[in-house]
Structures are given as C-alpha cells and as structure tokens.
Length: 421
Image (cartoon, rainbow, N blue to C red):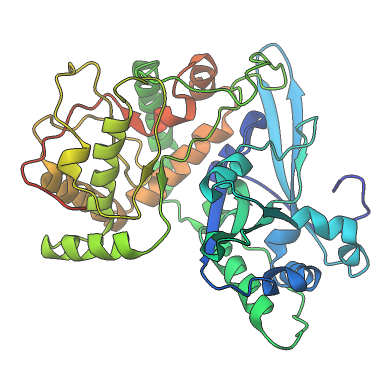
C-alpha cells in the first residue's frame, strides 16, 4: 500500500546490523506489547480510534515509516539493501479511513489473547514480492463482553524498527489519548533516531579492522562447529510450500511463545529472591530461562514440540524440572549473554545460584569493559557481509537457524535446593 500512495519520503537511512538482521532474506521478527484491562468501560479505547492514530502518527515518526528492500540475485550470492523510509506527516493522507485502518483492528470473541498475539507475530508483514513492509506497527484491541478482565490492547511492532523503548511509549500515549477528556492536537515530530550501530562507539580505533577480521574467522568456525547440534524441530509457517524460492537462505519459521505473563507479581517475587542472593534481576531470570527451556525441549510424549509455560504465578522449579536420565548428548541448555559471540559451554555441575551469579558477573563484565560495543560492530560486519559463511550455514540448517546464535550443546544443571520462583 505504501508504494501505491503518494507519501512524501522525508528521509531514508540504510539499516545495518541488528536492524537489518530482523528483515533479512524475506524473514521478519515481531515484538508484542500488551496492556491488560479489568474495568468494564472499555469503549473509550475505540471511540476515538482515528483521532488517536492520527496523533500518534504526528508524534512518532517510526509509526509512519516503511522498510524497503532492494534485491539482486545471482548464482553466487544474494545481495540485499535494506532501507528505512520516513514519511512526512500528510494531513490529507493520514485522514483517510482506508489508511488509518491499516494501523488497527478489533477482535471480539473467546479466543485466548496469547494465541491471538502469537498468530499476529507469525503473519507475514511483507507485500507479495517481499520488497517492503508497511505499516511497521499495528494495534489489536481484544474485547470480551462477558469477561471484561479478558480485554486487552496489543501493540505489534516490527523488530527492525524497535529501539527498545518506543513500543512502551506508543502504548502509553495511546492510553493517554483514549482516557483524556479533551481532544488535544499534538505537534508533528520529524526527527528519527539513528540506527543502533550509529549510536555505538567503535573501540580500539586503528586495531579494529584487524580484530574484526580475526573475530570473523573465529565466529565462522564456531558456527560450523554448531551446525545441526540442536535436537529440535522447526515448524515452517507455510508447510504447504516448503521450498518457496523467494527465500533463498531461510524459509520463515513459526514463532512459538514459550513464556507468557499477565501480571507483575512474578517479577516482584523474583526480585526479592534475587536481592537476598545479592544479585540483580537479570542473572537469575536468565538462569530460570535456561532451566525451563532445557526441560521444555523434552516433553514426555512430544519431543519435537515446545510447550507454553506460564510464568505469571509462582512455580516450584524442582517440581517443574524433574531430574532425568537423558544422556549428555540429548540435553540442550540455553545461555543468554549480552551481545557476546563466545559460544562456549558451561560446567555440568553448576547449580542454579552459581549459574545465576555467573550470568550476572558476565553481564556486568561485558558492560564495563567495552565488549558490548565491540561485539555490536563485529556482529554488524558479519550481517552486512552477504558472502559470509554465517548465512550459508543458516540456509542449510533445517533445525535452529537463527537460534544457533544463542544456543549451545549445554548439559543439565543441578538444583541443590527447593526454589519457589
């Protein structure tokens, strides 16, 4: 639609690094922000929907942006150029109902909001030729007249446009506009923040080109070593057309929501436990993810299917993660680092809190010694090199694909005490 209408392009920037990764080779990744409601008067969320969307379009240039992809195919490589077009605010165009309706939709029924959110994230946002994505944001209002506490406002955001905070701000602004008494006209904002890589300092100045080349070689070797190490089965979104030639490297795979939460109670409880262990929240939370994913990779009867795990209430992790007799080759772990390209293993005998401390120390270490900014640029170089082994490996890996960057053939972690997390 954005190609057919006469939008005025105010500014165009080329996507690099992480922003480019999330729309590479016709694939996509979505971020979901959700507001849950318990009140009965929910009509205010949709009564002035066109006014609300127009004000958001004025204030947030990301909302009126488009991803445009220029491709050239040959027998040796697949070259792509990814552009972000910022449209100027056009009062006439953004007053048209047919345009505003692209930014929102309503649902009234009994279907679970988590299932709706998951389905939204798996809808292909591209046009048929995979050359552009517009819009990059979409609101979904879910109403349940018989059960108001099951009403929700979902904001779907394309990952390539996310800056880590705009989703929360846009959702907050939506609720502010919906609940205020007067219709206030907001000013037009034409300033689009630069790419993440442009905001990240490049360390080691003169030595960086040499270090970058060495890291490229090491990373390529690690990726080859990890090729097909994961005993998981990916599910294609379009299983009826498994060899769609529009996707030369990676066929789109279904995103499955492994973790869901509908309140802050769990995180508040987890924070108090962490403070008793003199840890910040991220370390133990990552360790919790490691243990849980390890368990969920091997359901009793459905070894190829990941199951949902609701973390909105307290669980006894010992009961959830039963010690089993799987061999070391069968066990998969999950380690979430801070932008690290070190894919090494962790000791089999590491218990929960030791692992939590390890994650916390590694995170703080990477943040303090400049490794994050260095790895950000290294990773950007890898992504921007279309001839890199990284993409050829992803193309022939039937299982894992992008997840290969985060997974490793870790072993089972031992829980030494009963934990209620």
